[in-house]
Length: 336
Image 1 (cartoon, one colour):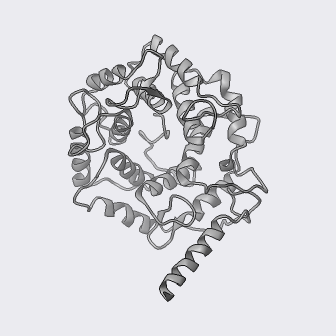
Image 2 (image 1 turned 180 degrees about the horizontal axis):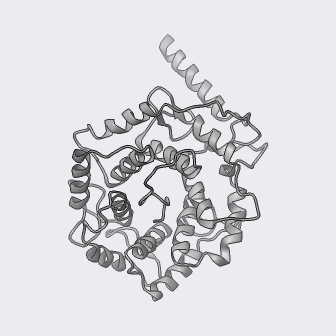
Image 3 (image 1 turned 45 degrees about the horizontal axis):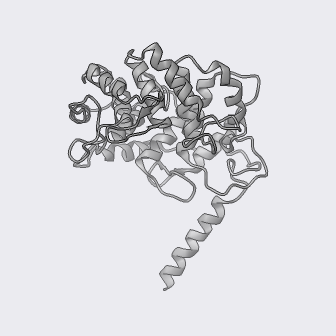
């Protein structure tokens, strides 16, 4: 009973801290913490521990997270790690040309896994290791009559996620037709919301994730011009901008959405309007760093995970706090 009370007390303390409006992205001002530092040797050990797992790299997305994380810290990928990664990615390509998340149990090829596969191969400088022609054929088959794209081989309806990542990937393969561009652009714009962002379902509730996907896709098709000002307005009013003061939020901020926010800021380019406060953003990223093992947590009060560590490193690269010597394949969250 005593241990239970201690655990509950610790949890309550974390919860109250995470809802404190002094948190830079929960609203209100927060004191600068430039004295905060990172122990990258611990981060290195945390990342390299992934490759010691017998099932490494576990999934296509984890393969990408691993490669990006090592590159962000300027670490070499060993020959053994490289061979495991390349063989795993090759095994994930199916007969229809698409990729599954992992080859043993996942049987449905999908656009998300295909996207991460090519992102990882680009960083490994092996862009043509897999059959790109078959992949392009799979992606073309995902288009529906309404101009959108299905997310996987077993889904019937198009979605913003499927369409956005699909056209970005087809553009990377230099296989997106003018007709597909027109149809996909019109389809994606249906998801634009009244507050100038984009929503994952219809055009009612906007989100950073949906906006990041939509902007990446429209940018790849040279169709961002007409909505650029609207997107900048949406971003500047986001909790992730670090500009929102004296406001409480019902949900906790996440490292993943911060990474998506920063990637979108980069895509819309320069503006006369201030979009974000880099100092506040840096404070938020550092607040989710876990000194015990060098990783990053997904949101306030939670421990380290491999995906959130990738998101944290992505943010620091976007902020210019980490400057990898070789940026090949590292640009963009939902883009190339």
